[in-house]
View 1 (tube, rainbow, N blue to C red):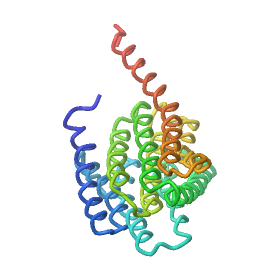
View 2 (spheres, rainbow, N blue to C red):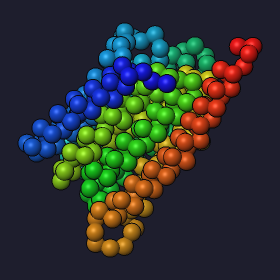
View 3 (tube, rainbow, N blue to C red):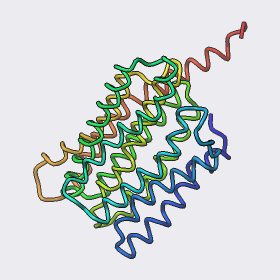
View 4 (cartoon, rainbow, N blue to C red):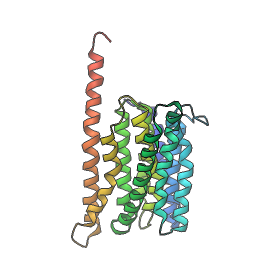
Length: 282
C-alpha cells in the first residue's frame, strides 16, 4: 500500500510539472513541449523518491538515467518531424539492453536471451511508435497518448503486484506524467514524439519487473501490456465520420486489454498478502 507521501511524490508532482509544460506547449503551439512534459514529469517523480547513483547499483535504476536521452529523442522528433521518426521507438530495445546488462555480466541471463529480448523489444518499440503515429493523425493525439498512459498505468500495477514495489512506484510516475500530455495535446500531432519517450519507459519498466522481481512479471503479461496500444488500430476500422467515437472505441479496447492483465494480477497479489498476514507462523 502506497503512503500519502509517496502518492504526492510519484503522482501529484509529475502531474503538476507535466501539466505546466504541456499547457505552455499547447498555448504556444510548441510540439516539442509534449515529449518534454512526459519525460520531465517522470524524472521528477523518480527523483523525489531518490536520485540513483551513476552507475546505479540496481539495474532498474538505469531507467532514470535513460529517461533523459529518450526525452531528447522525442523532442528532436517533434522539432524535425521526419517520416521515419517512428524508428526511434527502437530505443526501447536499447533501454532494455542497458537495464539487463548487469544480469548479463553476472551470468544470470545468457547472451542469447539477452540479445533476443533486446531485439524483440526494439522491434516492438518501433512498431508501437508507427501505430501511435497513424492513430494520432486519424483519432487525435489525446487518444494515442491516452492509450500509452493506460498501458503504462497497467504496467505499474502489474509490476507493483509482482513483488517489485519500487518498480511499480516509478511506473506510476511515468503514467502520471503522460496524463497531462494526453489531455493537453489538443490539435498538435505529437503522438509519435511522446511515444518515443513513453515506449522505452514502458519496455524498461516491464523488463525490470520480469527480471529483477520474484516471481516477477510473466512473459504473457509483459507481451499483452506492450501490445495493448496496438488496439488503437481497431478504432480506425469503426465506421462513421465522428473521430471521437472511433477514439472512444479504441481507448475502451485498450482499457479492456490492460484490465484483463492488471486486475487479476493485483487481486492475486492482494490475496497473497492477506494470506501471508494471517499465517500464524510468519
